[in-house]
Image (cartoon, rainbow, N blue to C red; front, side, top):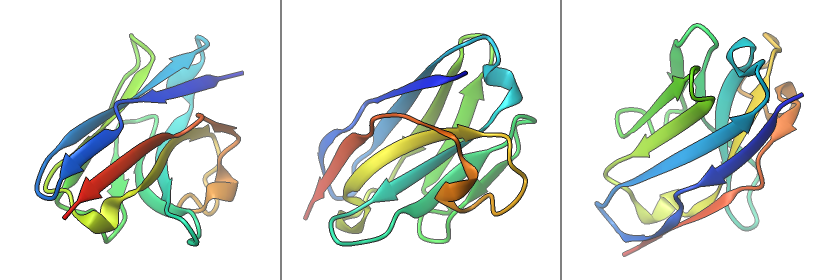
Length: 123
């Protein structure tokens, strides 16, 4: 019911910033919770951020204080502002949508996924 497309990834130096966007199709966008996950080579998918359909946000410990999630239900978009980037943030970033209230920090809680966008942070 929802199709997601991420954009905004790229190569930045440590300490820099990037803003990722997630464009959604479908008029039911506002009924889904949106989450961001990332996956680095050889590692499991890591929870980054979640913004509930109500607008409340949650962040993984590794990004708390540096990343900010937001959403615009009128334009069917979600964003992830990433500041003070570190080399450890290098990964493919995905946005995801779901309605589950169970295990909401797990990738399995989300039914719809974008294709991912690469973020590379150099030292």
